[in-house]
Image 1 (cartoon, rainbow, N blue to C red):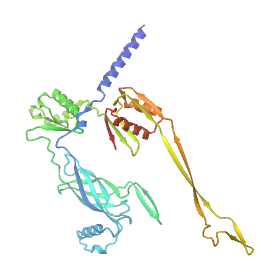
Image 2: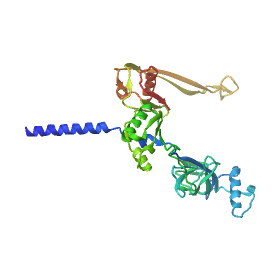
Image 3: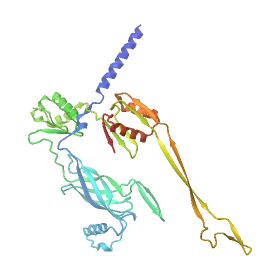
Image 4: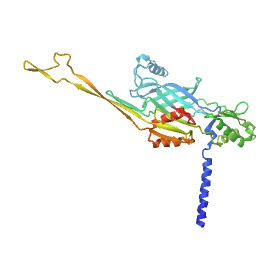
Length: 385
């Protein structure tokens, strides 16, 4: 009897623990759902040249490369006409990078290098010092270093072997920040705002409720579906940076988007399992038509005896010649229609399970999902890529 009571107690404890963990499942930090307004990355771009290539650089047809080499040599006191240059060890490239928020002078950033001319490969090359400019034209960084290419391109006697894209490479830590970013978090009225990654009124309202509950004095309010405004200046004796750090750690349960994503090119279907479907009946069948054509050659084999000499009948007769005769066979095969029914309130999981039992392919499932959406029975957004 005691053992039985102990077993029941442990079972109830396990069930209570499962309910507690299950209720907390799905909570997400505000910092993962939104960002502070004014905090953003900045795109950088620059033009440079890669040297040291083993004959895989730009040809003489790339006039920009020849002019760039001539300009680079002039900075070292070497003056030469671009028309006199002929080197396949140099390639003109575009250098791109991203300047993160709160970047300071001297910080390292990764840069990507992409060929602009007709270079065959950037493998083994080194990028010369290249200014990186922001959208306003200001130089905010410099890039230089050996290019890392995750591929190769080998040619010999009209034979060619290529892996990945050897005309694109990267330089980890090859960029240096020369101008610090200015990220303004607090407005003139000392207010701050959160910008949701995906605008949603329900998620927005839950964030506002959670923030007002934890910090009643900040007066958090919804501006629109993708923005929350608050006044942390009303909190006395609170460090603003500490408040922001605590703010981004507040957990809420975001609203789940009812969305089905279909990629027809790869045959991929991704959907939330709890998306509801109206009561429907699905009938699906396949019709396959196969046409096969065989080509045979009709060759005259009869001969005539002329003056005791065997002569083919086609000699001297234009109406007798070798011809190609096609022989076509058409076969039609139609599978028996597969049918299934789902009651109202069924989910995408129930649908996919029923269709898998019918041994349908991914392509068939995509077609069925599109038909269900057009019939108005899919309670969710259908995204086709």
